[in-house]
Amino acid sequence: VQLQASGGGLVQAGGSLRLSCAASGSIFSINVMGWYRQAPGKQRELVASITSGGRPTYEDSVKGRFTIARDNAKKTVYLQMTSLEPEDTAVYYCNAMVVTTYSSYLGTYWGQGTLVTVSS
Image 1 (tube, one colour):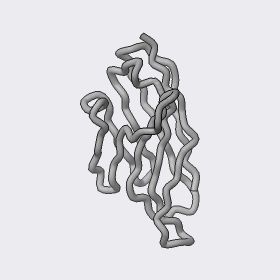
Image 2 (image 1 turned 180 degrees about the vertical axis):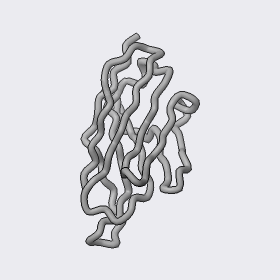
Image 3 (image 1 turned 180 degrees about the horizontal axis):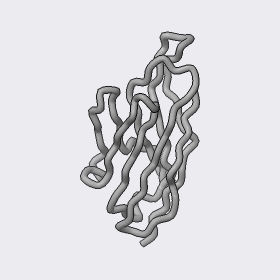
Image 4 (image 1 turned 45 degrees about the horizontal axis):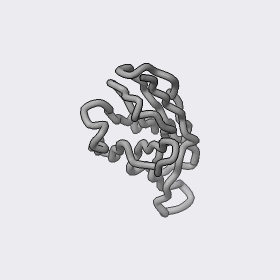
């Protein structure tokens, strides 16, 4: 199973970015998909997650600014980020809980990370 993230970059404060993460490989089903971030010197934290049924959850600091969505047919999760702040600067990682075609085990998989830099 591979997760390919894209969409990071440099943006000014108040701007917007959209991250995408596509899953591929021997996938039977995908449960929760999400986005985490890790800023320099800090622990990785959950930003937002979404169930297979489309129910989202957000970290408090991004509520009202970020929107998570997923396209189950494309096995892709998105993170629309608006009103970006310098404090949002971090490497963003996508995450998926996947049942593979060769095992009934629900495994956790990570994308490679994409850097988001918000300048003040």
